[in-house]
Image 1 (cartoon, helix red, strand yellow):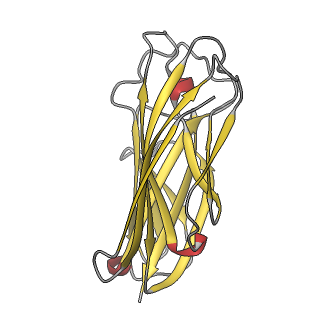
Image 2: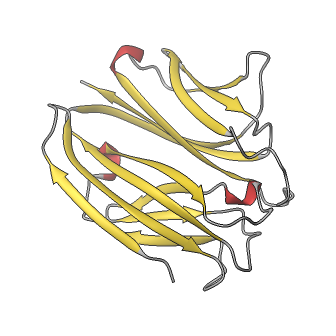
Length: 189
């Protein structure tokens, strides 16, 4: 069974409506599963973004499987998922922040298998937006069937940014084509 700590605050900048944050321990030795959900205070799912950091708790050789994807799956539920290959005495700590915004003009989201372009990024075609009025976030997890003993976890990350009116770029460091990336873009008024 996992543990969660919630804290929250309202207000902030003119575009921030609320912020919730917490820590969740995804413990596979207690209940091996590929996903876990936690309950949060209700938000408008179309005006919210989840940000998270995953910390490996054990000295296990399990590397790629520690990539945990986070997603706001309903107005009051965050679901964390892995590739389903984890079991045994293994746990990760997830530090998460949930931002709800005001003045949102449009929302786009999706999931894509990672790849690497010649410049270390891969591109996703999106509906037209004003890149100067957008914010994007991405999270990822390893694909099912990827060896859990890959040794290049340190330095692995995936950052997204709106690189043009119809293009999201996802910078890919060390994950190659081994990850499923979930992305979301909010465009403000």
